[in-house]
Image (cartoon, rainbow, N blue to C red):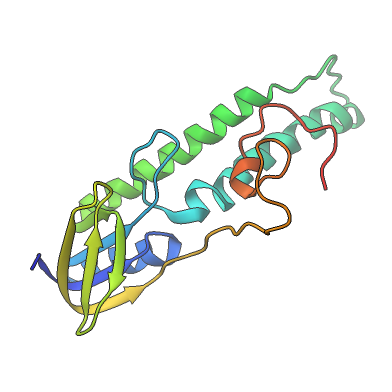
Amino acid sequence: MGETFDVVVIGAGPAGYAAAIRAAQLGLATACIDKSIGKDGNPVFGGTCLNWGCIPSKALLDVSHKYIEAKQHLGTVGIEVDEVSIDVPKMIARKDEVVKGLTGGLAGLFEGNGVTGLPGVGKLLADTRVEHTDHSGKVVVLSASHVILAPGSVSIEIPPTPLTDDVIVDSTGALEFQSVPARVG
C-alpha cells in the first residue's frame, strides 16, 4: 500500500489542477495524477487544453492575426509595411515556449501549494483507493478520503481515415505543421 491522501485527483487539466490546488489550499493532503508526456518526452501537467489544445492554438492564432493585420490592415491607418512574410517554424517555436512557460508555472503552483504531482495513470479502485502506475510501470495503490475524476479528453481516430503524418492529423498534429498547408478540409 502506498501513501494516504485526503484528496486524489485523476487528471491534471484545467478542472483537475484547479481542484487539486484548491484542495491543498484548504489544508488537505492532495495528490494529482496525470498521464501526459510533453514533446520533450518528459511528464507534463495541464492536460490537453494547456499542452495540445486551447493554449497552443491561441498562441498560433495570435501570431496569425498579427500577420493579417500587418499585411492587410495597417495601410488603412497610415502604416506601410513592405514584404510581410511568415516564418511558421518560428511560430511553432514560440507556441512551444508559451506552453513550456505555462506548464512550468503549473508545476510551481503544485509545489507552492503542496500538491503531490504524480506522473502516470490513475485508476479508481473500490473504497476510494487509487492505483497509480508511473511511466516506468511501477504500480502503487494510494488511499484517499476523496477522489476527484477529471480525466479530460483524448482525440479519437476515425477508422476509415487513420491519422497519417501531414495528410490526416488530429488537433495535436495540426499544431505542429512546419509550413502553411496549400489546402485543408
